[in-house]
Image (cartoon, rainbow, N blue to C red; front, side, top):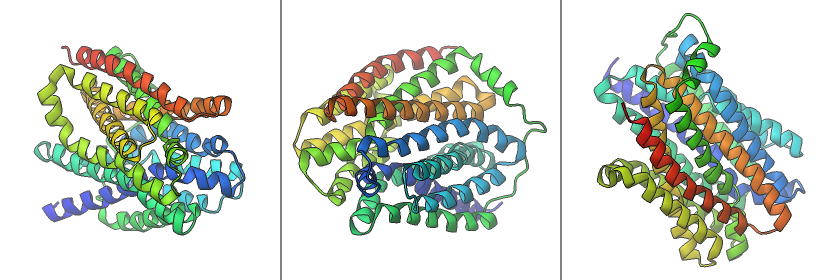
Length: 387
């Protein structure tokens, strides 16, 4: 395989990660319009986000081992076509059940892209190239999240929320076709699919269980509240969905910058890294609940995003180190816990909003959860890295 072939693989996988992650993040500014168009309350419309996250988390458990058994390229190709088709179908949702169904199936196929893509990059590239190559794909993934709120907000403002899901799906469909020709046809690594065996081994590893449980708390705190940031910003500022999307982009930009500087910050802060970034996230979330200033909201969203990517990248890499022979399984568990935590958080916060009719309470709760995460993550990672 030539260097040009490898760079093509990175470009194609990176673009798919960009679109698939954007498909997920774009929901934040859309919830307002979805609720209005389908004549739903905001919290009821947010059930579609919960469905996507929960489905994504559940099916992540399945796709990692499937890639090991049948070949990672084959699984990525199937997942790419599936997520493209159901993203486009989401544009034609006519009521809540149809929207929830399309988004849930979209999330299920999306679960086959992220963990298996990282595993494929690890399989194609030599050890000396691996970390840099994975970093490029992850950078595109975070960039997709960074731009999604702006792209989604702009498309919804000038057109419709339906155009967002359709255009993302169309882009994914084009890339899925390209993937059929550009990705290497690699065989499976195992002769028998034994889900029970690999997960029994994983769940008997106390250090891994502790790390992925912490990741669930991060999902609860971050994804559980981020769904409602669009409405929070609109309620505090009165901005339309386009401006709200621009404001929310601060979170995504922070994940891109944070992904690049997190290793340097970790080297500098050492054992205090997770504590400092967790506290930064906690203060940022509280600031979101307390301020009406647009400038401070942008700053708070940036701190929120920086804390999220720093915590996530550290915990995920630590999870892999606890089981170096089953990194794919470890990644599946990490992703599962992240999105299930997000689904639980989104659902619980919806109940809080219905009960108190105050979006700020959601972010006060998330601030407290992030504060707990900062201490728990610091202890968990330190313990996991002990020989």
